[in-house]
Image (cartoon, rainbow, N blue to C red):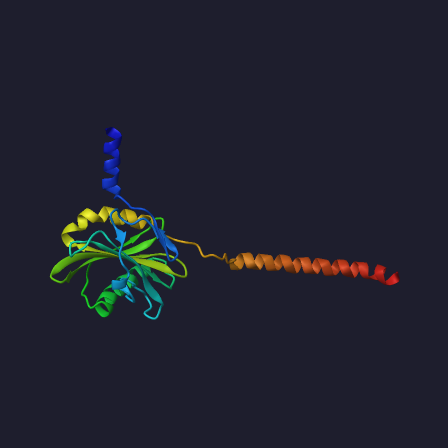
Length: 220
């Protein structure tokens, strides 16, 4: 009984999670009950694909929902082809980009309530706000996760009256997010310089050895 109660308490505190989803170079565990939905309604959409530079390639990668109808929460994952470090300066830039994205690309007025910079396993910037859509007030969380080369943006939207219930699951889910390492491994400048120096040294040593042997070979 004690162990069962402890497990239930941990799930309530940390948020229950579903099975891992891996797609387009990332992986994470969505909140429990969220499942992939048909991609057709989102075809060609950039909803949630917030970028600091408007000309960067980006696309909506996955759409998940915990149900149907206006009371359902929705989770979108977008991939943006740019580096994002979640630094203090990018915290403010990302917050402004989120508001701009909703206003110019989605035609919705998002009212920011809080901007956080979280230093978890993957640093991220979170923008929490509210908007009114079809007569309903919804809470929206947009998180930009740090990565080099390309990064992910996660957007979660739910009725405002349900946000406190869902927040622990959403935060626990974001803590599991990982971008996969590139298939190729590039050498750092320092490593490349060391290898070049070693190669040059080997060439010089070989040349000097050849010069020392040359008179002997000539006399023969």
